Image (cartoon, rainbow, N blue to C red):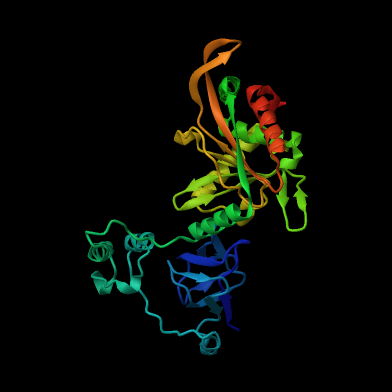
Length: 371
């Protein structure tokens, strides 16, 4: 018996999915475990696997198209099976126009948010080629226009919704502190001199120190609910990662219990997966605190919007060489500026200040991070 496959909910916040690629064609046989398609959620691109042997009889959402969760994605069944009743039952017309298009043209159209129904192909047998897309762009952009419209990606839509909700629901305030980083620089250089270890970054050290400072200030590790405040037992740090079309926050679980090397490996692995859109939804869930580091972009200091349901987010600026007063003498050293943005419903100023005090001590006496 043929079965309708609906657009799955691949993450807890997914509302709409986009078909990035079909790995099977209509009429092609499918084995259990085969990859049917790649679906872009609000967080990542995930592979959709076949759960049983069958034949692909119908495609309801073409490559590059988006549709709400539970929309008809495909129909699987036996070879040459009559699916007209299913199509009628699900109010589907089985006469969609098949579009022939080159891979380069498809990518350009997808990036620019162009509907292929509007394009006339000039390639062999009416195939749409890159020049057709470029010609369409040229003909539809007025030279006097000062802007170019690009459709929102699913990730960008979700980011917008979450940030607005966080800013409206959470009364934000920020605390600022400057930390002398010379001892941390020496420690990192010493660690990285050992060739058998992967390179440790300043961000790795800061993430570890952030978790240890939470152990000393457990109220930071909390979330607000309508009825209560949740105090989390595990310290799970979200790492803000910039993508081409938005921001994503992979999570490193139980950071306080892991070695610096483990933390460094997990961060590198998840950042790569996030940028390749291969990260799984469960790797983006469960954070209790977030670190956002823009130091590598040369930003001195900044504030961030809280990543709900966290109560705090730490913003890390770049390390700068500057004159420092030490024992009434001016010396040249290195400092960085940290900003802790807190949800005032949960975290009072004194609690946030105590946390930054602990974090500053760990970073300025970093051997405590290694113990």
